[in-house]
Length: 353
Ligand code: SAM
Image (cartoon, protein in one colour):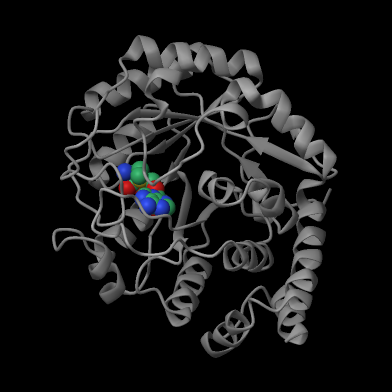
């Protein structure tokens, strides 16, 4: 199996059959350690020991979609819905800037209240106030015209996980009005427009097979995104998937290592979901190849309302105010948080560090 990891490192690709063989062995500790050491070597080559931070602003928990796994799905009525106004969002940016954040991630449910006009105005204001910062959007599926307007207004990056490549598996996680094909088309549109684009998927979502994951990896290889978000599925008590088990942390870490070898310069977060499942999840993620963390910059009063899954970490270390603590924890494992936009390196002009 180690020879497959060597092959992956050298060729940055594997056949579907070999992906499945490797994934079948993800619980082998010796193999995982071997993979993580290789992944760290590649991570250190391109990023040194730098870890980029992104300030996450969860600006609306209204959503018109009804994804079966998600705690802010439309049919979840037993919850408090909120939208942050422009002034509040700007004040989150101001707090974040002072703390050293140079990327703001505006994430939310698919909320029709936030029209193109409203969002472009917001993006222009943030870019005017913080010209040295990057804006990442994570607001779901929109039409290409809308994406273009957001890009022209100054948004730099867009996160849209493909969730699962396989259309049947996709259909088992989402209602009929959502499709894998449209999700993938959105990603192609975002890339063609010029966004630094992020995709990714949940690990251990109900019905997910290792074959599905192999197809996810093959899709990511073809898409060649700038960012990849991979985190465990975690059930939410008020969703149809309440009784399914959470996705395994070891498989999530294994996948972070594989993605680091497959896409050496990708921006790869150690996700909040990983930190929720394991108190040392973020450190373990970094040691498996991740190089980004995304602390929460949303106002404390709404953090508990952006509950995508049960027990989401939303205070203490996760809060931006806990940044100092996070810095110490990251230093302890030999890495450092840097004040930088942390753009995806251009692969063509890449100088190893
Ligand atoms: N609405 C936007 C979208 O669809 O991309 C952004 C918000 S959405 C809540 C962000 C991500 O949260 C999704 O892409 C999904 O992978 C993740 N997510 C939602 N429910 C989850 C759960 N129960 N466990 C783990 N991750 C979840």
